[in-house]
Image 1: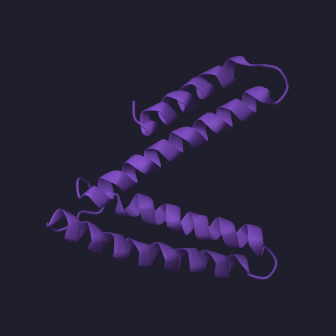
Image 2: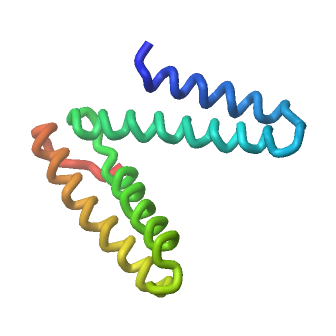
Length: 116
């Protein structure tokens, strides 16, 4: 079984199991870890499909890049950079990565791209 399927399975088990655990914060942690594992598995599948030329996931992958930059700026420099500047930087990263990802998909698939 490939790693993505195992990660998805573990994420689902943790997510469902977390709803039945009522001791302290352990159930909430299980739910959060299950959601994170499921999201990572979906992200990996999107990356594989996009760069394989099967289906364009430009907006999803660009959104992840923009959100990662926004989270890094918020965590590393919360007082040095204003909220508006952080949002603007995240938007620029989103737009730039969307353009690059569209061109890469178009080249790999050999067809015009569709935004999805």
